[in-house]
Length: 586
Image (cartoon, rainbow, N blue to C red; front, side, top):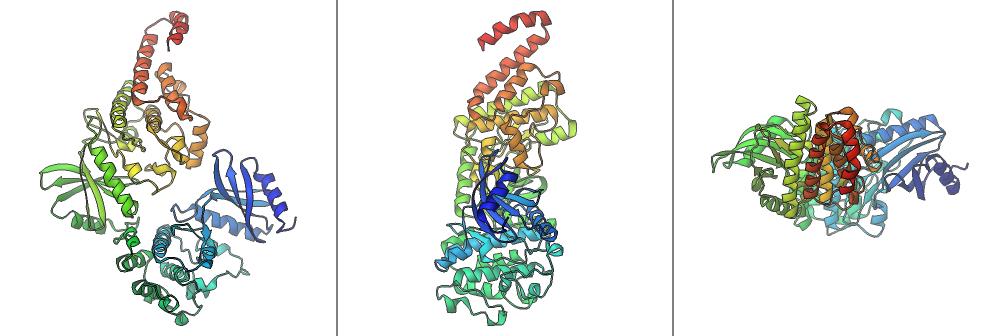
């Protein structure tokens, strides 16, 4: 097979992967690797299919090592990897398909608009900060592998020369786009965050001027000489990033972003840049606590942290004006980085605050200061359901039924008011000391939609095992998605683990779409067959096959419990005789 024969490449890839991925077209090819756009036939979504046919073991190891590096990261501005493997003479990796164009193509029409530069800078620098927090130095970003959308959103697709792959790069390999790499990296250094600051500065310089930066940092012309409209503040930031000596640059991508956001000009798009850098996993807890105390000022006294999750951290605080203890949820700054997101959050919080039900946590206030946003709510004295099951194991059937009844009653009330939760999971179901239930975070997933994968669903583990299939697929979500999640929580409480397990969302989704549920009756014989039937119906992959409302789900649950109780107290031979008549009445 000729290395660059498109028909042969297409045919060979389809022969090896066609059972799962249907190729649509070849996008790019080189002697080392080929890129197709295809469709995952099981999950019914478009994917990128990258393959390596080189037959060179060293190149193949390098290819797989890059896939492993991408798999270490989970950031919206870095291409995700879903699957990787080797079949016969071909190595492959599957990633998300991004509807965008390379920065080279975009700049060919002219330098990018200034507001779009702001958006691209935010995405690029935050992606780099995420990589650094996970121990990876990107080292090289070139315009051909940096995808940009119509609004300027950027995605890094290439980590071939990152620190993670460096030991496996062939000695004969000379990277393209050397002038986009920091001078010390070109000289063979591993690099550090300041090297990525240079790489970001170089690619942003190209985006705003349409001219590639000179390989010699001392000869790089100020952007304003090439494009008079370049704001002086932006020029200052870029020229500092492009210093030859690493000590003269910003020390981190986060520092560069903070400087850029606070002084990059009077464009309205700058509102999308949070002037206070978001906390990272490496941030000193004492520094974070000091920052939060300053932001809370004289309104709240910080007592203790009581929880953390995908949307932020929860603290026990004292409301100094009303002299009462409340829970305060501080949202991660990344989640409301643009004015539209902040406005959605306020709107949904107001809607959730109108939900008046004993099984819904009451919201008291929405506020923010110093780059942080939060809302205060009723302080529930008790663990969440995940903590309870972790401590006690699978719960008694009657207790689970009680919790389901309270949850469905709360959902019926919320849905009637036009409020869909979208993130029902054990961590959002608080159990009071008296055994009651409070559901929290109503409306938060929709208010902050688009800030993560899988339709806004989140979980402490990072795998949305309680989200509905349509939510994981990014389809329209309605009240039936909440009912699906409640049924999944019911299984979790009865078994001690989710009904659809898996270390990746794609694995979970594959089990959901084929209704591969655990055999609850065998695992928990005391759970009646009628209750199992009701839970299984609520967990159907086809949302039209589920209960249409929380009220109908609740009614079916109550009927099932009565039938199971009657069956346990009825001799088996009578039960067998009467079952057909009861079935006709359903």
